[in-house]
Length: 241
Image 1 (cartoon, rainbow, N blue to C red):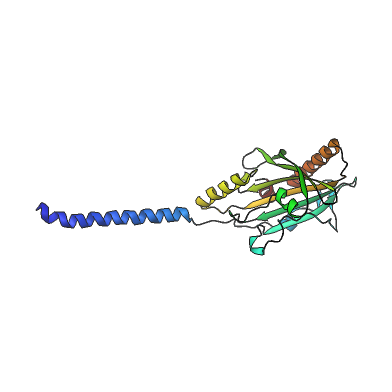
Image 2 (image 1 turned 180 degrees about the horizontal axis):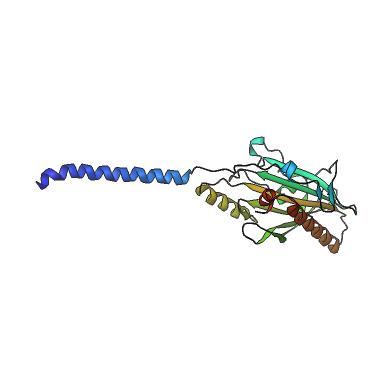
């Protein structure tokens, strides 16, 4: 009797083992290629970034800024779906260039370009790049936003001071490695990672003293804080999630 049962049982067991292997492979494939969920409502940066921010007003003819890309890239490799580049002036005549750029799908090979790469690609030499903590709070972590301060020189010796932060999903990226790791983790969790660059810049004399540079940086940070406070909750979430 044992002999009679052994054959069908072996077939039945092998079937279950094979089914288990196939199910495991399907689960693994699902994890490796999850269904990605994108942000439902896209922002409208052009209208949601105001032309009047505290004492600052947008100029009708903005000054040409350093591009937010790294140069001659085909359109397929552009990481931005929307961008706004404006120049604002206050009642004392100070001018600030603002670049806000958003991409709905950050990938390992196509993601937000860091200014310390964009500037050299357009003829600037980065003289200083420092980590910086802004006096602006993330609405997700309730922690201050981290970013960078940069000083760059163009070919003619003109100096530009730049403050910026990069948001990738729910983190503020200060390294390429952290960016790649976060994009991978979000992808495995079935989430499309969006990205945002907030860059504020000013031209200053090449002979500027350290105190003048610090004043420029503080002016930029105050402007950025005023901008974040002046927008709707949805746009604030985009800028300072």
